[in-house]
Image (tube, rainbow, N blue to C red; front, side, top):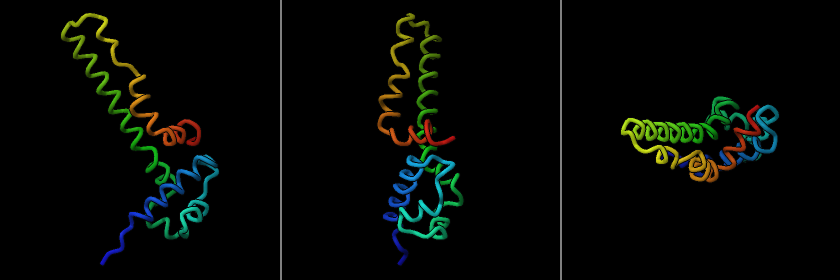
Length: 118
């Protein structure tokens, strides 16, 4: 029966996030991430091919969600323009909604992007 890797995956994700938040991308090390997760560096490489892949695994979902929400926002505004809606309705939704609904719930991933990615 194959081993369930869910628990180790969550441990690794937590270790990666803690390491990158504490040290930033440049100073973070595979060995330290492995130690935090209770794994060897070799075991960690079975999950991720590189430090870059680890960082990407943490921040890519947030980037994709922000891009998707921005595209939805633009599409809605173009639809309103095409429908000749009154000017006031063009500005009902704003970047504030993306901050509230996407960035705040993913604060640590946003901090990784803003402060730790170099």
